[in-house]
Amino acid sequence: MIVLNGGSSSGKSGIARCLQAVLPEAWLAIGVDTLIDVMPARLRLGSEGIGFAADGEVTVGVEFRLLEDAWMEGVAAMVRAGARVIVDDVFLGGPESRQRWEKVLDGLDVLWVGVRCDAAVAAGRELARGDRVSGMAEVQADLVHRGMTYDVEVDTARAEAIECAKAIAERIKSP
Image (cartoon, rainbow, N blue to C red; front, side, top):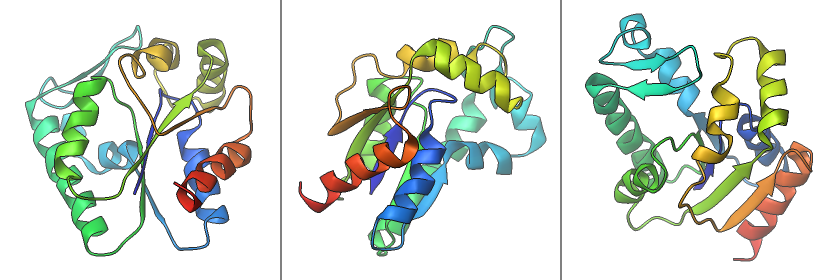
């Protein structure tokens, strides 16, 4: 399993797609955005779900956490059943977010990847995407990496997604 952690618009999804192309085996790419997309609309608006403030801050409520926990357990079950999975996530809680994953992934082989991107570059990507709350990328660029350690780090402001994917793939081939 590969876990990509980085802020919004840092390039995680692009790296995941490139990893699928460069790795010799079939890998599933699953992102936290997919989880949010399949949640009921009321959880994308209310205090019990996930909230997006005008300044880019993201808050999560109790119902979101319950569904996220179940989703994480499901992802771990797929890996235990033999699937190779790339998870694209945003560790808003820093080490606590990683610890939640570590708990469900206990006993599995996991490569932890930090996807860094300069805040200004990520903000420009966010603006070009047009599907994010303005300011989210800038707020998250450093926040998600505070107190974190990784097996490998890549910087999408300095390298294209394919180059980052190749660097990650090398770590899988030779631990």
